[in-house]
Length: 257
Image 1 (cartoon, helix red, strand yellow):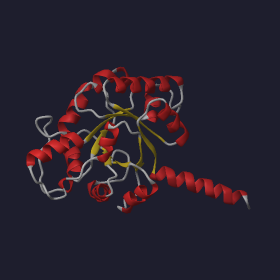
Image 2 (cartoon, helix red, strand yellow; image 1 turned 30 degrees about the horizontal axis):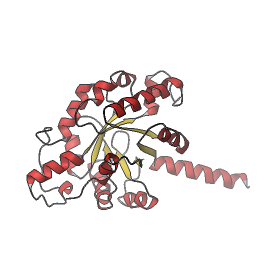
Image 3 (cartoon, one colour; image 1 turned 180 degrees about the vertical axis):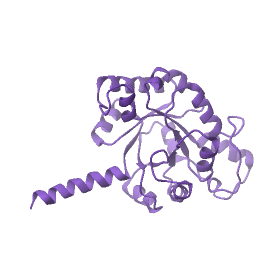
Image 4 (tube, rainbow, N blue to C red; image 1 turned 180 degrees about the horizontal axis):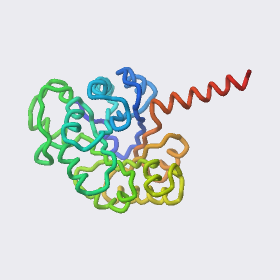
């Protein structure tokens, strides 16, 4: 059975780098990101244009490459989470987490009994269509599946210890842009209030043995946060890379005219 090498690396103390897929639905994107050197990618099913079919094709290629395909779910309904996991996603991030109860529901949906309430589907991509021992399959999946809470609201900062104390939570990933909006300073992701909140999450995550993580569009701020204790960072997105590179090159060409 294919194991989640990223979860093992995090357990070993490694720092890992990934990116978000929002628009480009071709399965070859997993190969491109692997060739560049990313450790993981996250398919955005909250804001992106992916459906289950397009997401599953990229997930399968990512698994073959040991890239740890992850999914940002659009909402906490069980069937949405179960479907992407059965298609082979090695973890799910739930946006807009605010309370302990939301996290408990997420863990229940992602873990098989006795840790949760996820139903078993033997003939599916997540087992490489080779189920083997059911007991072993359940144990490995419960160990390997990454449970990621997205922290992007002021109330989540206030409740951070209650959120991260829930058994089964692996990662607390901060969304600085939405967090800045929630804190009354829209877009000011380097505002002292926002940075103080991020530092509080890092401290709480370390206390609860949870991986602190963040998603930002720029390399420089990510480097800064890695130096302050982040262990998992998500750098920009497919759309962000295209827009940044094309704008830079286009401006250079036009400046030469």
